Image (tube, rainbow, N blue to C red):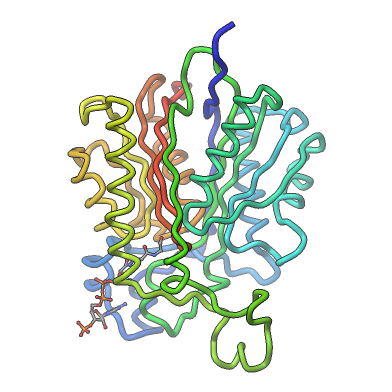
Length: 332
Ligand code: UT7
């Protein structure tokens, strides 16, 4: 019997209808379209506006999109992993609700949090479960309602983030396709540079924490930028080297969409031409856990069976890493 690898066999996505353009942000903070475009590559992002709808709404829509596109029976799903930094509530796990709502009645579910690397780390977790032979269909969803934790008076964060969700299905493969290798890293030095200070166990919510806007994301953008550029480029180079991949062997770079300049720096380090770099940051901004599956969903028709994909991400914590995956199907 051939070795079992874990392949992505279906994708889906969802973004809310409301478009927040750079022009809209000009009315909220002291910024302008030219600055945002040249410094980040972002032109617009989507925002989930409706009251009472959280990350689960985005995740359910993305999962349903995958189920429809690939004609999957949700009863056959064994496990649902929701990669997210913005759960509906601190307790109970949002993935559990999502699994029930999509009819994955035979699955167990939970959430996985590693900031902007949540989906990448989730790929590792899902693949390991498939490779173990214990589970046959794992739905990995990346979803974040970043607008719920962003301060729209802070120009250093509100221009970057947006809301969205994407989903992939992992299944066993005996042709050697799917996840080939991973190089995942973390470093606690990052916790001072990108954080939400209040609402956790160190600083529970109080009138004071709300007044001082401590429930919103704060970041030292410059420092995060520096770590992100070197981190993502290092791991991408490393995973190519140890798998003997030249730039000609790599078909696609699937990089976390946080800043166009970080994506370009990573591509330059591994010598990849622009045509091989998947980019949709101009349309969605940084959707945190959703950037990687949103890319796969948007570019699905261009991905061919056997293509070599390098995934790379960097996030708060710090967390970062790269994954080498062989694409497993041609879209019909
Ligand atoms: O996924 C992980 C999550 N986060 C990231 O990956 C974010 C990484 N960091 C970044 O993407 C960038 O650091 C930012 C986009 C946040 C900022 O870009 P930057 O090129 O690092 O700008 P900066 O912070 O060095 O600021 C340059 C100038 C400053 O003005 P002075 O001091 O030169 O006069 C800022 O005050 O730009 C000013 N500035 C702005 N101007 C207009 C900062 N933010 C804005 C803004 N609009 N939104």
